[in-house]
Length: 295
Image 1 (cartoon, rainbow, N blue to C red):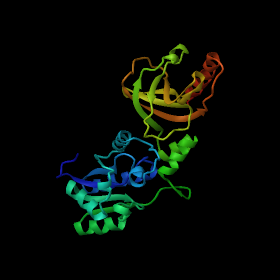
Image 2 (cartoon, one colour):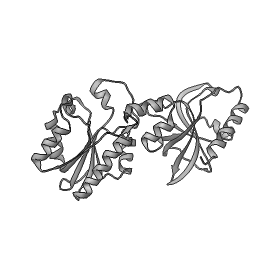
Image 3 (tube, rainbow, N blue to C red):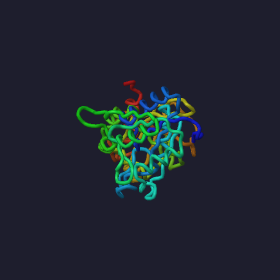
Image 4 (cartoon, helix red, strand yellow):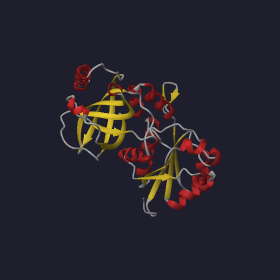
């Protein structure tokens, strides 16, 4: 948390998938902060905002901890997760801005042009502009980023990930989609097949990525390793829990209980139920050749 005396530009938005549109807002905030000799604070909400607002069961692209790491990777100085409680969300737009000004030494605001806030979404960029003018604060409003004629949105990114268009989703995210989790000890069947894997459970908060076999990568002690990843069920062994199994190339070591982020670079194929272990091994060797390709 920033010291109250530290000047900061507030970057307001849920920024739930941190897609190209979100990144443009954050970049603009960094530019404004540089001009004002200030820091950048992202103001977002913890948890599933849609569920809190409308009781929707739609899942998230990234968990809070995953989002926080991504925000900092983009160069921001501070992240504030407001609670998505009924009490907090009941604030009107002026109450919300007053709350933020009591908490931070605000010198400016940066939002997307469609940003709305406050109880009943009664605040917008015009509300912020009026408020900022009275306080002598700066404001930057960022135009929407579009993919063709369509606004880039988290809803669109989710649909692409769920329906199997990883390549398009990664393009809109400007990075490979990722899942972070703790490695746990499973059945160790992979090593008997010649494909030892790390196993990670997917948070129930997260969307269901299209089940399949993927080319991807992980970082271990800041070193990048290619990986062959199975996301989803393991029907050959009659196991149907959603799970990540990643075979990491050119790595040997114990990763149990370590937190690892698995990045999904390319969809290779759907998951099949093979008639024998030998058939599965043959298919995995073919998958591995695709992972080794430098395309």
